[in-house]
Image (tube, rainbow, N blue to C red; front, side):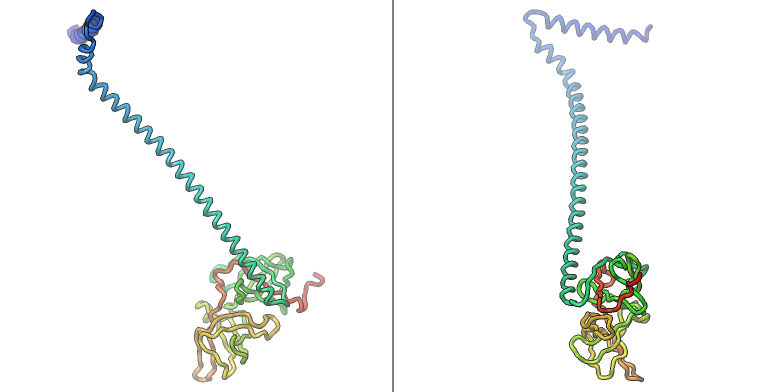
Length: 288
C-alpha cells in the first residue's frame, strides 16, 4: 500500500490542478491569459518538441517521395535515351545500306558487262578474315561455282576481296586474296607494262600482306605503286584495285624481284560484298 501512495498523490495533484483551472477560467472577470500563460510555459516546449518531430518526420517522408519521383524520372529518361540510341543505330544502318546501294550502282556502271549481286557476310571464320568466310548468296541467286567456274568478289569501294570458293543453295564461301589458295594476274595501275602474279602466302598472311612474284625483269615496280587486275585469265575484269606495294624483295642470287602488297580492302571490317557474274561464261546450271 505504501508503494501506491505516491501514485495516488500524483493523481490527486493533477486532478486538483485541472479542477482549479476549470474554476479559475469559469469565474467572472478571470483572465484566461494568465492561466494559459502559466500552462503555456510548461507545455509549450513539449508541444514545440513534438511539432518539430512531426515536421521532421513529414520532411523525411516528403524527401523519400521526391527521391522516388526523381528516380522514376531518371529511369524514364534512361529508357528514352536508350530508345534514341537504338534509333540512331538503325538510321546509321540505313545510311550505310544506302551508301552500299549507291556504290553498287557505281559498280554496275563501271562493269557494264557483268551482273552485280550484293550480299552480306553471314559467317566469319574462326580467326583472321583471310580464312574462308561465308556470304548469303548462293545457287538460288544464280551463282554456281564449279571446278572451272568462279566469281570475283569486291567490296563497296570496288576493291578486290577474293573469289567464290564454293556455292550452296542459299550461301557461298569466299576465299580472300590473302589466303594461300588465291592468285590473280596483275599489273601496275599507272603502267601498261608487264603482268605478274599476286597471290596469298602462308609466310606473309599473318602480316596481312600478299606476295607479288613472277615479275618479269625490267618491270617498273616501286614502293607506293597501286596494283590492279590485268584482265588476263578471263575471271577478273581489268582494273580492279588489289592493293599497294609496301616492300620490294630482291633475291641476290637469282636477281629475281618480288614485292609485298597491302590489300586495299579492309577484310576485317567487311559487312557487305558484291559478286560479279559474267553471263558470257558457260554455266553449269542446266539440268540441275
